[in-house]
Image 1 (cartoon, rainbow, N blue to C red):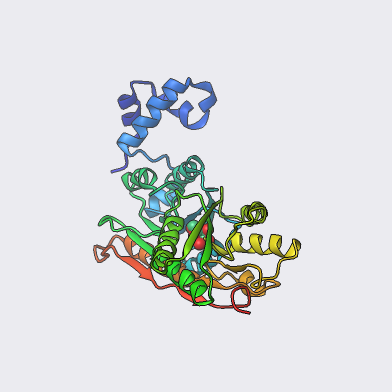
Image 2: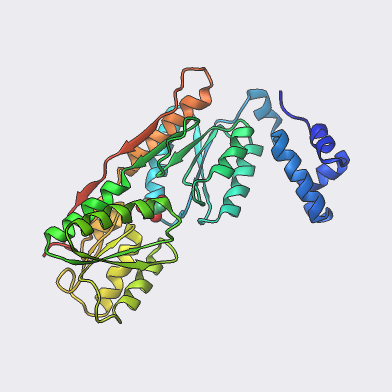
Length: 332
Ligand code: RIB
């Protein structure tokens, strides 16, 4: 039974008109009242519905995918796989960009619930996304975590073993003779970054080699370009870099090349994801491959199974294996 707007008004201790104003003309309501009404909406699980048609049909035929960075080909490749699976079930996929900002993410999730979308694939912006996902779950919208491992019994997740991925990258650089290896990546709040670093750090420590941390504010080309520029001022710099994703690695490659360094001779570089631009780079980039379209197809399949609501779905945590793709940026 859908929660009515009357229940929200009663719970918040305001009139129906005030609730309507909070939903439609929030600038006409004080922040204190807006907060009371928002809390009542979350507590009751009220979902404003924009489309009577979707109410009649129970839910839309649309899946949403909320990603950290729509400019990162990793996510568009994952979305391509998810869209293919959605189309096989006569459903469509819309992409939302959180920009790694939990507040933007929450606004997307509110819209997804209001429009009664069938479910959401999400790479959460904050540490584990539980706050955002609890709200969705209270409103009956299933969610599958993508590129993020979870062992919660109440939802599905699809990810890659990032600790192993970090280990593969470090082993590859150690095998090439490097004993001073930098990890370029951040923010450390992103679990994927932490796990990739952990795999590399454990492997480097076991080889009695030296790990340099080169933190970045984001997982972007620009952040990689800037990190390399700073690094080159350090006379005691490493001879090889493991970057937390390919965009960082491509930014690093550009700076090294523009500053006249030979890759891999002066500095070896390996990324993570194996997006198409990795192989196409001027110095073909070594990377740790994530099966991106398979991640998307699997996540969409699990979401559609759960959304079918026929009682047959069992939550799963699917973990794919990463693969080392060696190219010129690490092997002369
Ligand atoms: O999802 C966080 C990161 O993991 C993204 O930058 C993507 O490139 C993947 O590697």
